[in-house]
Length: 331
Image 1: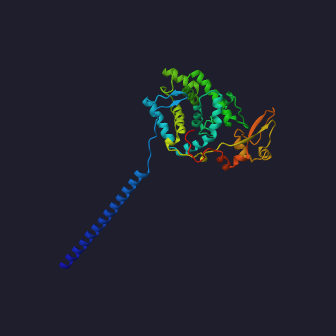
Image 2: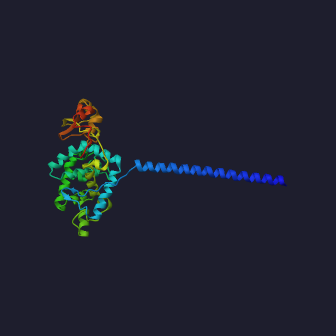
Image 3: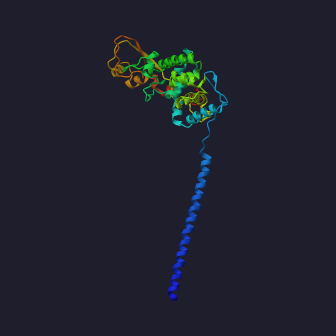
C-alpha cells in the first residue's frame, strides 16, 4: 500500500513539474513574442510614415479663387488631394508624361485664349494618355465620336483626330469656350465638360444656384472639378506631396520630321520603311492612324510626324536638358 502511495505521489509530482515547465516555456515564448512585436512597432513608428496631404491656404483656378474657407469645399478638395497623393504609381507616371505633353498642349490653349489651368482637365480626363472609356470616349480629351465631329475633328475607322494631341486640344478649347460663354464661369464650364451643359443648367435652375461650389451634382461631376484642381496643386509643387522626379527620369520631348501625304496609302507597314522608320514608331508618333491603310479619294493633304533619328537617342535628349539631374519643381 505504501509502495502504491509513493508511486502515485511521484507520478503526480512529475505531472505538476511537467505542467510548470510547459507554462514557463509558454510564458518565455509569449514574453519574447511581445518583445519582438514591440520592437517591430517601434520600427514602424520610426520608418513607416503617411502624412495627410496638405490643403493650401489659398488656390486659384482659371483666375477664380476657390472658396476654401467653406468647410465643405475644403473637405472635397482634401479628398481628391489625399487620393492623388497616395495613388503613387499613376501620379508618378502623370508627372513624367506631363514633361513631354504639356509643351504640346500649352501653346494650343494660349492660341485659343483659354486659361492655362485647363491643361489639368486633360490630366483628370485621361491621365495624359490616349485612353478609351467604357462609353467609347477616346483620346487625351475623351471626346465621344459625335461631339468630336461637331467640334471639327475627323473620326472614322482609318483616321481619328481624337488621338491627335494638338487637334483634340483645340477642339476641347472650342467646347469649353462655348460653355463658358453661356455659363459665365470656368468651373461650371469644366463640370459641363464632364456631364453635359444641359445637365448643369437643369441642376442650376432646380436649385437656384449660380456656381459650382454650391451645386449638388452626381458623384462623378461633384468630384470632377476638385480633382482637376488637386492635379494642379500637386503638379505645380510635386515635392510638397512627396513626389521627387529628376528631369532626366521624365518622358522627354521628342523631335520629329514631317511628311505630307496627298494620296491613298494602302500599306503603312511598307510606307514606314520607305521613309526610314519602323511602323511601330510611326504609329506611336501618329496615334490618329487607326488602320494600316488610309483611303484618300479626295486627295486631301495629311501631315504626319516622323521621329527623327535623334529621338531614339536617350543620351542626346538628356544632354538637351538644363540641369537634367535636378528634381522638377513645377509642371
